[in-house]
Image (tube, rainbow over all chains, first blue to last red):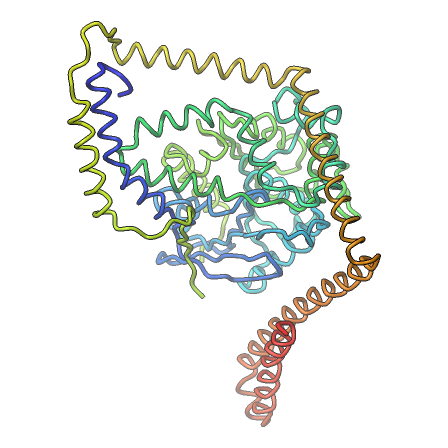
Length: 354
Length: 180
């Protein structure tokens, strides 16, 4: 209750102030990830986590999850009851997650090619050998989805199933705010990268937050005030805040490639996105594809993800959507109740029983 | 190696929630007693639901206005100029620091840069060698595991184990050298 009478408002305020020590306690206790894991593979700053589970393995191809380079990947395992990783583990999948690590100033010349063709390829080869399989299932979230699509187009023979999760593919719609801000007319990406090297997390974070300033700076805190006496809410709120403030820089050359060839020139859907010596041709993707989108995604609108279908050759294609935002797709209650069980069904139907 | 991160994201010292709760409640009690008079009759009251709707309408309007403003050519031009200005300032500061350092070191900055570059290359090479060492140890361990029976039959087991031991020592050597 925000304001009924002056007395009840005062009472509500006192109730909330009474909660402050608990609020501080929850802020201090916020965890970075919910499920135990072991580092299955390490190469430079890149680590691959293998998640532990008591549920016996039921499906043969391991699932490799690839997150974006701009945030930490544990959003896929934020809380025990809001963990995409646990959804898969509970259904008997062998789940791995790529942690790209934090680039140092010396890594500013690392390109998308380095991340995809060197690191990701090494990881896939390692999983194939360590799990004794020829192919793996791949799931990419946000920018990690775009990178996974590029990888799959180059190494289709190694990928059994491909899940795309709120991944930008087609930037032809220029009406989105981020597309306007990164337009060549207003944004000189070369100048930025040449001057700064790695793109600092403050720059990226504030750009994303400014896309919806009223939600970020007012509505969120009004909602917090309203619900701060609810302990379950506090746990989720601080887990989310911890993750969203845990930004990392992005290697300068990766940012340059992604903005210039993706957001500005939209070369991926034209089959002309340069990656080292290659040009990415999405038509080479023939495996089963599941495309997950969030209806209220303001960062990667459905219009950037759904056209993926038109550029690949897969006969087995399915799209699923949920009423959520970009991150709500991974941590939203509705997504965990309605979407992820269906995603597990989809993947199980396309995997071999152990 | 089992891991599960549980770090304190706000770097706050550990505190006793019960003690803080008790002190806090005491303070709030005093505050409530001091301000707990009934509201003046002349104060206008508003039903909570009406207030909520008004607040929502106002915030929605503000969000629409912000979105429109951030799409306007004026904002985009201003954003472009601000970014260019900030980057130019950064380059100037870097140039100033470079020149000041160069003057302080009597023009030998290039040499320092070169030494720095060599050190960077050295640490990169050391890192790569460590990684290769680890992979080699893992491969040898796997080979020992697989060919354990045949190797011992051939009497080669001890030699292989020795090789693994030797390669395990290498990173320690390099690490200590790096530390020096």
